[in-house]
Length: 477
Image (cartoon, rainbow, N blue to C red; front, side, top):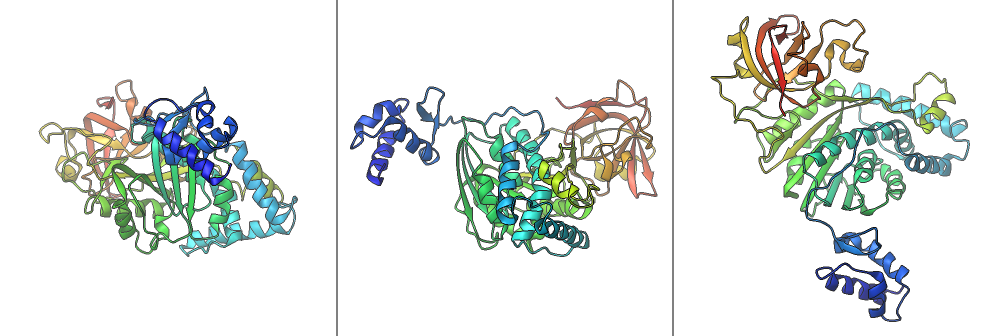
């Protein structure tokens, strides 16, 4: 179909979309040369995002619904086969069919070792093509999964519209992007823009080609600092990139100007101490003293309060099945799991500029205590409202999924209410039916404590909130 015919198809679609469903079997007659309806349908599919149309099961096209996006999500067990095959195709094209065993595999393993060492030392990593491919093998699976958990929660809260315009700043090799785009249902439209200046974009682009549905993708090969966003965007994503920027606060504030009034910023970070705590510092700078507000998970339960605690906080999800490309790279080396990474542990922050919060409760100091006044409550029993900001830390922060039947001391959970100056931990000493919600609640859930005992922990320089048999814990509905 030539350009003039395409324009006629688009023109007819624009005219009819506010009148009735657009049927390619109808409008082909109004196009010069009467092209086959299948050709008309293909043009409509290609122009779906710009026209704001989605294709129905009967083959007709209708405007995307002006309502929140709805998803069906039950967790992530593995990286989808099409994504695994797409990455393998890139690896085969670069190194040949025997990539794990030949020189290519040796180079990838050596580069991964170097990247991990640089990361541990806090050194910057230059993303040339070899680094990008090694990074994709090691990190695409866990970043893919982490983003799906976060975006599924946002969809359940009604924060993602069906007509979704996305800006992915520092998109890398595409783990978070692919997680989001795979999650989008067939009745959604996604206009996706990636900002990625490095060789990672060479991996990102073929991975984006695997995405199906009503999705338009554009990759801008510019730095986050140089790119000029043209909003408004419904979703702006900073996926594991803020820790690599010289001035992340100013970058987030700049991009906030391009956010729709009802839009959301999501920042993801690795779960290690430096980046997770660093994310909270950025969050506080742009929200408590800047143009945004925190939606979750570290919500501000007290109006005007600002936390100052360290807050090493991250979520943990079940391990993924080992992807074939990781297994083959590892087995061709020492085979000791050095190149397998299936842990799903991540810190994240959800920011908005409309004041909306995941939990907007009306608290009164005459009924519940504030964490910034906890010093006066030591050795007393109090009532408290707080967000659960960790899994069981008695297992250790690096092994938060240990079997709960194993020995490891009393279950321990980081809490926050948005006013804390010092870290607060709930210590479960006597499990009961009355306090079961403490262990059962998910990361980021709001909990109400009744009659909890406050103690000071000299060793950790933190407050312990002792949950014994006299304490009632209720999760917010």
